[in-house]
Length: 282
Image 1 (spheres, one colour):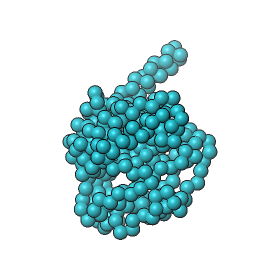
Image 2: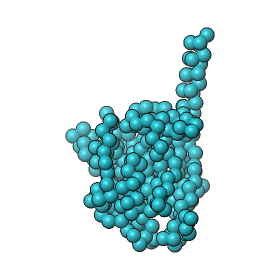
Image 3: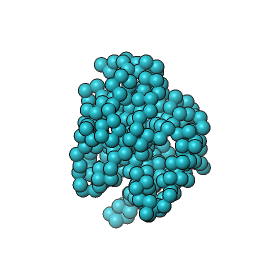
Image 4: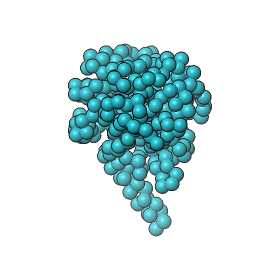
């Protein structure tokens, strides 16, 4: 009887996980700053890993069109680059978005792996990059784009910052070495795939850091939050959500897809909606 109950619970958990993986939710965050002179709405996508919500990501595109954002920000890992490298679903989505909105794209560890392992993936990175640039995407690889009162920077973290069981230290001077100094006059947005280094990002000068990578912790438990990151770290507080320190913010997306550990429980995929408004946070 006990074994039957355990099997039933496991089956129920798997069914719940499969449901969650196929049903994303939009979630809104409001960020205020005196540097923001014109109010905007941005959507932030991270960690798609080739997940499709309806044919051609029709459901995801439809929700973004309903929101009608002023800009789309992408935080990387739109595809999964492991034994193979399929950029098709990611490219289709990004091209469709770029046809309607300004799109700013920062790399995750999977894009970086595709770029740096040409011995394994051939010219996949070059072809993907050429395609998104043709579509009009603003690609931010250790670089900054300016949009009025916004400065949007994307950084490429080295693979050592993603290695399992080998924690690294990142300092603000490392961020500056990668991407140059922060823009202190404009509202500085930083696309930094890993949320582990919030202190370095804010000390560098990011008013708002947008991250992902942790997939919300895979399984989320009441009062404890995310259980496990892709780097096999457990119960980190920064797996998902909105964090603020000294007037500087970080939003960590739960992501849209999965890879390797293909489970989500109490952790639905997330489309982040950011309302950027003028005013003090206090």
